[in-house]
Length: 171
Image (cartoon, rainbow, N blue to C red; front, side):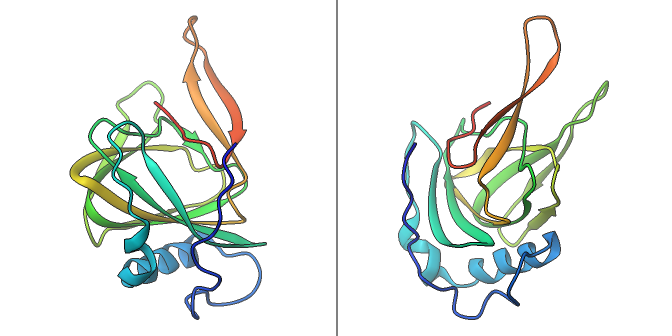
């Protein structure tokens, strides 16, 4: 597994309090980080082969990432285990879909200035939609140490595959 070193030792007052943060607070922090390009712009990576994610900041209760998405890149359906998430789109666009059984997935297109939030157990997938790269900020609390990746096996059964939170999720 890769070792990630945070690019910043502080978020300069962007975090509202000590302790764990809820989904609404994480969304607000993601939006505030998005408004500060000096924090994330040097971390953008353009890589046509894999989605790139760089650690902006982490402490014992949260972590913040900048993700760079190119055409064809996406996560597949996953959850964030016990972590809540806040996401803000900076450049390009991504499509977020929520898993719905026996019907089409609920899907939205997110463009610069758009944001979203989800609590523990929130199941979704994110895919590149536009821009080279599309760029998003993701903030998690507690830190994203584990995820569940959802796959349908050869018998049509939906399976949850636990994985470390710092590996690339794939469709």
